[in-house]
Length: 379
Image (cartoon, rainbow, N blue to C red; front, side, top):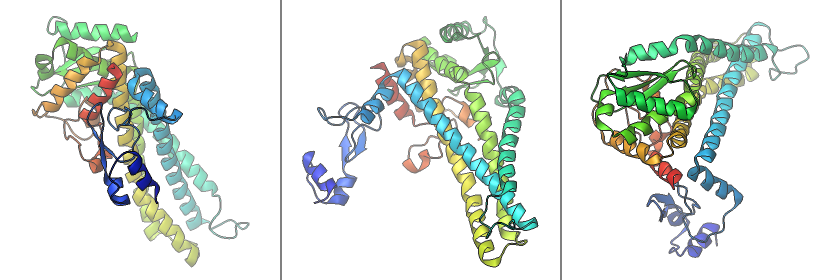
């Protein structure tokens, strides 16, 4: 008798077979979300699915980071660091492949190497070179990125006399965060959205749409501004810029690697040379895909982190919950947005991702999942 069958009987489920048990859906008693059979905690709210069940330390930590905003912030920061390390590893490995292939083509393997499988000095230099190029390009983008984003979005600065409530809320959140008050901008559109920009905490701006100002209550506006202030506190524009530049470089270099794999040859021996070409071609195809997936995962983690930071600053998750509900229900399109700036906004203005297959490519977590987490942080 298999473990899945035993688990089904222990949970009081009619064991109709392993496949049926695996497909069984368990409803969370707290939020009502459907979960896979055998799950210990709810995928939405993190609550235990069976009352009285003994939990391991890992499960207890998982519940804590979904119900406590400090634990949630730390968990998201750890996840972001791991994702950045994965992205850096992809870039370094891709640079190594370029250097390795070039050395094989022009010099061949060293005399002491029995075959082409050797530690390439040119490969090491290529990996370090691509990493340094990514850092230099990121620094260049950081110097002008904020002004460019404001220009593209069509945002205009507003004075305290023109938007007194918005200025008051921004000032309150800046005091709570211990930062200088960022500049305040408004986009004249009936769409509901907002974003923050600024490559340092001293040179930052918060942008909201006219529709957001006219639709949200003061409490909801405070939740949105707290979320955007969280992006400033956590330096998310730096993360987004560095990740975006690295992903772009990976795509460019992957194209070069593919060309080397197809047209290169040089002094490679036939048997080993074929395997070298296959490895390079496969990595050149997969590297941009995985780099893009990491970029989207980083973006989603920073959104969760900004939500938790909003709760920390406002001490009131209900404001952001109400704002997200209205933002999710709004159907008014936001003009002037493209795929280069979609990740900046509090909700993606281009597309809502609901299906599991699409979530991997989503810049934002599903709104309902963010609301469930905020409700848990409130409890």
